[in-house]
Image (cartoon, rainbow, N blue to C red; front, side, top):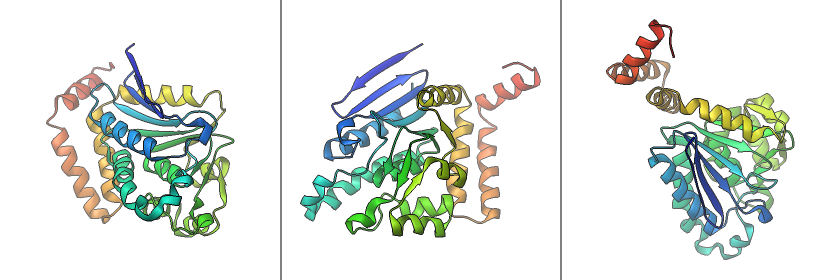
Length: 257
């Protein structure tokens, strides 16, 4: 069982059993994203994509929160804050969304503002019962950011998405699960174990196939059904030439793992 851990002052990067765990580490601020954490997380996401030992990526918070959003203290220096942060946030959000590896958000508590966008950018979301999501921007007189206007309506529909944006109300984990925004609710003491087991299982899977599935779903979000079918067959044709495909077909026919 290989494992390595590197701890930045605001972020822990750990690889175990083929899974990269990115743990936000500002528990005293409910993991609110400041400039230091933003830069560290952007680098960690890039690193996880390049890391040959990391086949699945899990994003989680330390303490009792996933991520309470951007650190509002920094908004007092707003003149150039938006432009400075834009590149790093795009690196984080697009990195998670487009990464050719499964990405999982383990919601151990509140995911608000940019924290909610980071969770939505992941492929799968698992939450403790006490967790909730919040589009908090209306409370400070801002429109949404972090790709929320693209991500949220595609997951739960425009009407519900706009309701959450307009009101800034909490979306409890139970309701998020009912809407399909959260895959499953878990007891607090089982969240990391369940997500870790699932991630380790995916890490043993056919990585080219998993990457192609993710690429197909992302591509289909902006295409017709016919274009989606054509793209699926294109990817399958390429994959059928791979050793991974041939080995797994042979194992399936011979009834072995």
